[in-house]
Image (cartoon, rainbow, N blue to C red):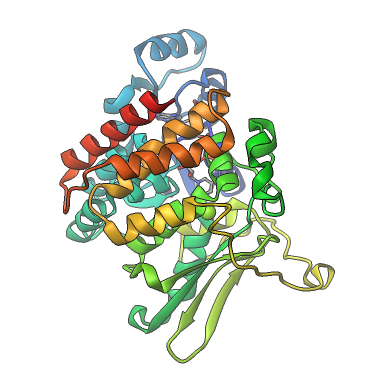
Length: 382
Ligand code: NDP
Ligand code: MG
């Protein structure tokens, strides 16, 4: 029985992870759960999964949640950064699923690594901000960071059984999002409702906007660079609107391995939690004959400058990726609140990256400082 801490349990990845627990109650036991604002959902999850401890956003929410739990045996209820760190290092948990959104994932991720837990990482912002220190800490603690992001899980599966040094190229696939075929001249009319309507994946709001701006793919380029120790020139983004090929790896003999499946995050989450075994997930295979063919296109860097921002951040390293990420988080929130237009996201990130004085080899506090600087700068631009 594997004890699980699920951070971000009230979200989209958290829900898929809990579906896996429901399918395999003999293998997994929920020990801790975290959320932020959605107390109704958290109360339902507590009733169903009986965790030992939960954490929510702040003290007020913790008190409100406690009041909602009349009649059932209450778990320990903590809140804020301390609560999330506690949930990630909880003694009875063997594995931690990091599925909270945004930079808030960084400290719990480090706590899970320090506690020697098996880490299933969905929260890509952690590696984008602080890939070097996090990966160094994981190596030091001999903790393997197992990717949950579907592309990175695919790359991981393609490399397993091969030698990492034989990898010549990684083909990172992107659905292209809802605006793949919309002319760039019409981007200023895009509303949050249009952007939240992803053609192939059903995800939380922040990553849905990131997918529409292709910043999600930019974040994933940086994530792949750290997870697989790749030079940025070895990573090629390919638009693949069907989302069947989750990514591919090209080896030096010209062989290319692809990992495929229907777009369902349960596959990647379950693989991280059960490898090398594969769990029965009642998931269908893609209807290959029905598809008729697999489509690949080159991404349009002109329409989606986020890809160029990410490659620039990869090459420059230092505090620049954290600045790109922090500015993006603020810009996405402002777009969702209709304070800026869709292309305003690109403008804000570009301005913040341009104004930032990049620091080489920053420690964690340098990274957190750069993140705060970017957020303040982005807010001032809005
Ligand atoms: P959701 O928005 O659906 O869920 C986010 C979760 O994080 C919720 O549990 C939310 O709590 C919690 N949360 C929000 N703000 C904070 C905060 N400040 N501190 C702590 N917890 C917080 O997101 P997704 O599940 O879609 O994505 C989660 C992560 O996984 C992201 O980093 C995303 O990039 C990554 N990912 C997601 C994929 C997907 O298919 N959804 C695919 C690959 C990666 P509450 O709802 O209670 O407020
Ligand atoms: Mg992905």
